[in-house]
Length: 549
Image (cartoon, rainbow, N blue to C red):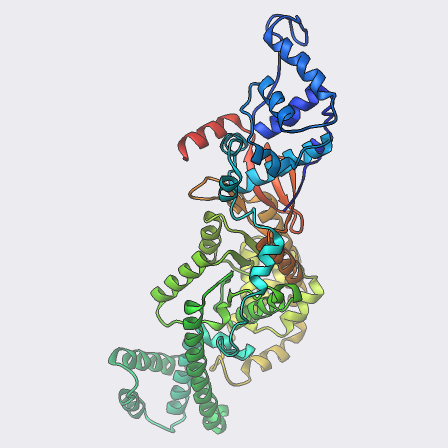
């Protein structure tokens, strides 16, 4: 860990006032030696405070500091002395005033990481021996080299233990894929019925005979079939007549793929549950195919980084995990959050209760959360939009309109596009070429929509990053046991995320101690985000630490 604090570096500790300001930062309490009798700034030279001030003047002029002299100054300022091990830990063998300043800065950094209150930290740590200090400051005291050795000496994860799944098929693990597949199968049956290829009674009889389904699921499939039959009753389906068999083959093949992918996902979940170690949890919202693909891209970029890969981290990849039961899924994710040392939180188009609760749960355990907010230009976003499903464009436009992110002509173009897509009701969601045809026929309008959406999305992500770093009060969460306020660390690229992850897990982070918004802030260097805060409000501090603990 490396800490810097410019306010302390600028103090003139060769004066009594400068030395008192420095030790005020150490003790977490304003220290002064005011004359008992003279007016403001005066000295009677006879009262105890003036006597102490005179001795402090002599001691502050010295350039050499050791434990004995340090404790003598603390006694003159009516403060508890420190143990030999405390002095050795933060100040080494002693030395010139520069060493003294850095020792105080280091103490304050560790105090913010571990306690969240300078006065409490000083009174608790000052008398301790080295064993107690190591225990109290765990896990921050372990050296980076030792932590790296522990990670890199692990056995590599057995090849094939976590099975890979084709990137384009990982969204089959989501519940929405099964819903869309069932709808398309119902549409296929309804089309065959309407085209006179099979009767409604024959279809319902065949559904009743499906052996792998229980009665409830059979009834659900029949209900969905009847619904689609009614919805498609007024549609001209004659152009599908020659392709019904081909569509059926595609849907049956997709059905087999979904089943196989989910089996692999289930096996992967068992592998995660039985893994001896888990270091990183990835919190994300995934329902639609594009959400799976963006998560895959991010996860692979972070963990393929050479420095991250060298640590042989165990991490939970949600795009490879599956459970049918929502209760079991919640229990698994709760366990993973408890076991992991760090959470990677993906800021996406929409955030959900589940993902936000995972962020809060991690912070409440005093573990770091790295929030990834994409930094993309409008042109980059526009290129992605061109390969995205139509429903993604429509969904994002509606959300941005609801948040007043569009105005004037932009709003008119967006509203017209949404009106036009509202009448677009494809027979099939997963097969067929209806969407491609619609996009081709409306390409000129889509170009305008993509340009508007790309610009708004770029600004949206910038705003989300700023909100998390600067504005949102719940970007700080309190550790339930200690009361320490923990902040979200915001990064804008997978490379930044990988670098920060390595430093956090190996105690190699760099911080600056700053003052802003009436607080002392421990700001992490890579993300420039507040990692810990200590309020300067005396009433809040007194109330908080009296009631919290």
